Length: 460
Ligand code: FRU
Image 1 (cartoon, helix red, strand yellow):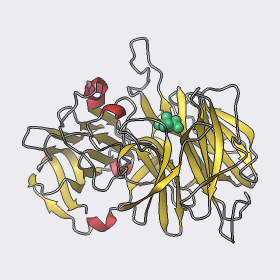
Image 2: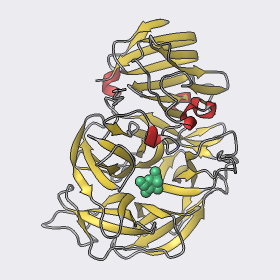
Image 3: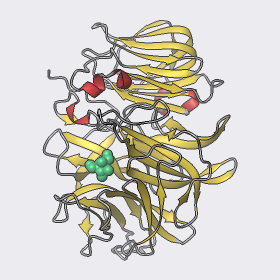
Image 4: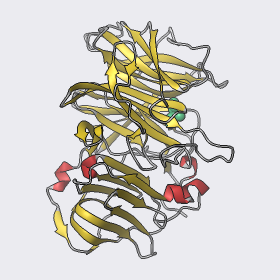
């Protein structure tokens, strides 16, 4: 087939497989991204931490692999913390260390937490005392995300532990003790948790805490995900809004339905950057349901754009709104387009206002349809390109994505399209929807139907 489908501004590895973003941190004007990486093939395998940096969240510079598998196992997901005060003692010659806290996954499937440190923020030394946390009861025990604990004045990490997330605390980043747990599923999807994140966020009503949890939704006997509320996906990312009492997360809002960080198929394991005032996430822009089989040759897997999350009040209560980052400078060249616009690029943004449909079409008769309807947002990729590579990808549920609107008075929709990936931010960012597509030929025109005003800008 020979098609590459490599996006232009969405992060991909130089070669081969990636999944979750790991250890994201902002340091001295640079954003560091570490990521789950198998450097030897374009499918999941022995996990390493790849590494790249960027100053503008668009152009990335690849760095050497940061962490290789070792005698404790593969290097699974985790986070880093910039230890300014050198409480770990890993600092050298006045340089504070960057401490990585990650999961070692052994060949037998045992999962333990380990640490490594770096003072040039590129080469890591593993701690001789690894693992730093073991858990004899749980098979699934992974993806620690470290954050400052303002109540106990030290660092906590939240880690996935089966169908709950567990909290651990430390004053030196080496000795950790468990302080509490939070069971996902009580007011949200239940299932095996992965890649949690926990952080404070400012709102009109003061500081709240957000707990993000990616979930493997359990399946019924026929293999269909058993999800409530019309959600059908096997892997989703949800969030809770509440408080952090120093030991654990407390769900104060108790929503009736799960809150989704993304309503599309392709944004899994998103977490925030450390050491950054604003809350900025990036996620893996694929889905385990088909990620190992997507049509790629040289590389497989990509990241979403960075997205700032803000908490806003809606008629349904507090919600996170996502705002894509790094693209504002391209918007200065935006111009209004008519109902039928010929494209000369496959990396662009669209700013829509109103209700109706925007379609991206190519000469093979393939199209992506984004519909802003009265009560719902629909992203239809059922005829967008290649899909038979995987039966789940080709299924109707994964092809026609729908989300109930959260703010029907806000008809602003932002779309970013890059080669093989579409990100839609509807209802002013309250409804992000991300989906991969594999068109046989690049889309060459945009067709606007209905009462929609559209502005277009090229990216890169
Ligand atoms: C999530 C995940 C993590 C794990 C990693 C392995 O996508 O399953 O739970 O650490 O990927 O690559």
